Length: 139
Image 1 (tube, helix red, strand yellow):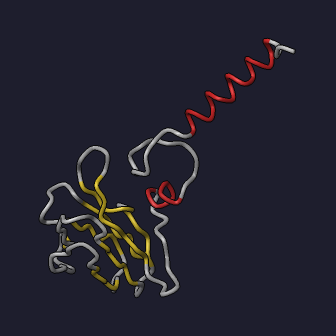
Image 2 (cartoon, helix red, strand yellow):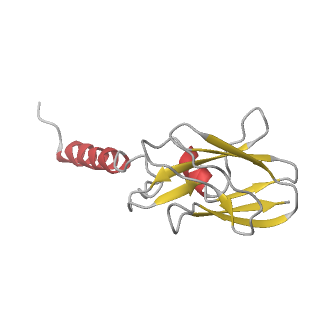
C-alpha cells in the first residue's frame, strides 16, 4: 500500500522542521531559536552557583571576535563575580574602565574574582582584545 500524498506532505514538513531546529552551533551568535541556557546568559541572567557568585566566561564568537558571556550581569552589592577563561591557548584579562579592578593575564582554566562593593554601573574590558567589553550592574 502506497502512502497518501497528504501523509507524504506531512512527513516532508516534519523533516524540514527537524532539519531547521537542528541547525546552528553552540556559539551564542548562531541565532538559533528557543530559550537555552546560553540565550538566558546573553540576556544577563548569568549562572549563579552554590557559592552565590555570578560566573562570566570568555568566548570566541562566530564573528571571530572574543566576548564575555554574558556581556552584562546584574548583581547585588557584596556579591562576587567570577570570570573564567576556558579557551584554548588565548590569554585574556579583566580590567574595570574606572580602574575599579584588574586581573592578571588569565590563561586557559584561570579565574579572576571581584566583589562588587558599590552600587551603579561598572564597565570593564579585556586590554588584550580591544572591543571585548562587559558591564556589571550593581544594585
